[in-house]
Image 1 (cartoon, rainbow, N blue to C red):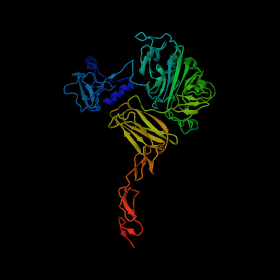
Image 2 (cartoon, rainbow, N blue to C red):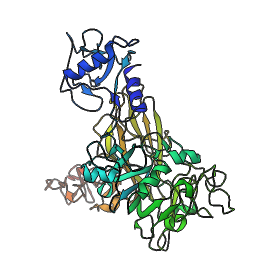
Image 3 (cartoon, rainbow, N blue to C red):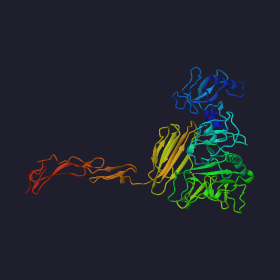
Image 4 (tube, helix red, strand yellow):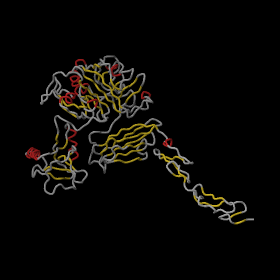
Length: 559
């Protein structure tokens, strides 16, 4: 494989994996010994070092600097950016063109920290122990690491990522630990970042055993595991986060409550029964957060005491149509009441309509009444892929504009671009084309109610990509912020107001008078003539003569 495809293979097929990095002569010897007697291996072996800036600053693909090197004679050749190991000859390193096809070695960890983080997710369901843990399987270090709460409090792990846990009564398995939200220690059992992996059409067996395309991207941990994790301790809390809202143009979306960049969360005490009782959920009424209102708690009211239903197994026996079916609303598997309820976090990600369809949550009560349809985020925090073309259309309410802020930005400078268009599509005026790393913290504002973001990548280098937050801001006339004096008028480019002064005034607000062209004309006009000038240019002083006189200085008598 070429270097980029080899790295993609490692990341896609192994947990927390990259092309191997080498930190010592000992590791070099181990790899040479491992590969040396293996048939079918190419003479050159891709490793994870590269120099995409072509300036001699080689780094490992996991971001670490090269503390140890093993270059062969005349190396590195800076005209080539990717690094190979020569295991069957000298055991040294050399640079090669990244599009060469070679064998490769992946490096991964069976347990321990992952480089991923839990930033800007679309939705996630997490749980955390709050009471006294029950006895469980111990790790090799002798600690009872039964969930992410144990990892935080018994081993001091504070970085979000993939870890192996050892709950009682089940084989060890990997989970994603959120160590950032509300004090950390949360074990993630449901996470939806984008539409790249469908949830709603999954079978009973899928939800029983778990599925996904990465614990830190889109994943369902599995009901058997959730049952063990939610019942092994005396008290367990369920935490739900929803980020962003796509619900617009439907009566259920709420005209005044729509917030495309909103964040809602909620916490409930909970447990899930075993498969023998159809994974029945038990919730505690008291709730914390913003997903409930001052008068309504839809998750508790709808789902407490309900069994789990999927598209191929309806367990509520209500006689009502299967709430998980797309023929109804595409709401996907969930703990449904007889009339389906108002919470559908496994629903179809891109339903045909917003509001009570697909992936949604109904937030209602005496103070609010609207649906939340969480928004897609970029492929953060993983590196984006080659040959991508992703378009994002953002629209605000009438009377508002879009403000887009990049909280992280890293794309290939030459060839991977973010285009910002001031309107509803790519034919709209281009605001800016962005690439590289210099746009972290930059903010871009549309002139109207819509903004289109287009991201494209070539088939070569990939970087981490970008993360952006957007908000809608009420459209205010920029000229309402300033006052222009002495006949000046305000002009604006849509964002920045300035005063356009009449000819005889200057200054930021036209408050400064220019010299009067006639001030130095004393005695210039004779016989009762007066000095006048051109107001349009504040220049060209001349004499306005009295009757019977003419000439430039009114010095000629006319009969």
